Figure 1 (cartoon, rainbow, N blue to C red):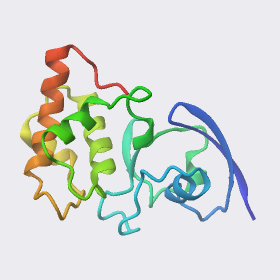
Figure 2 (figure 1 turned 60 degrees about the horizontal axis):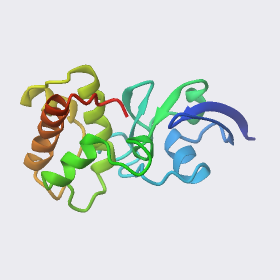
Figure 3 (figure 1 turned 90 degrees about the horizontal axis):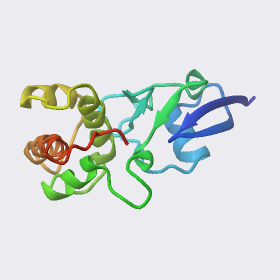
Figure 4 (figure 1 turned 90 degrees about the vertical axis):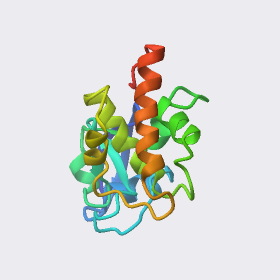
Length: 163
């Protein structure tokens, strides 16, 4: 039995019929075709599936799609202006923080939530924001550098990290 859910995804109102036991991750990838959100462990341990729900980073594999009724969801596809990279995306490229790219969307969205709250984070703030995100390629140093670079870029350009 499928149930209707209505939510806002990347700024657009979306209505979809989903099975009650299906996750937000399933809704995004399978029903809506937004494949930037990755499934890693399906247990909330790796962070690959992180999206922003009402501005907060959430493991989409653990949240039922029906729990998102009326909520605002931002995926990696929803960042930046059409055809332009969001400062965090640019910083990840410049810092060499993108290797295989599997964990990158979740990390970028968690970092965006951090920078929206704390525009000038300390290295410790960045580490705390990325707890629960696993990367097997970069060793994390480049990722931490990328988040600090994005904060610096935004301060120097007077740009708000506000997708």
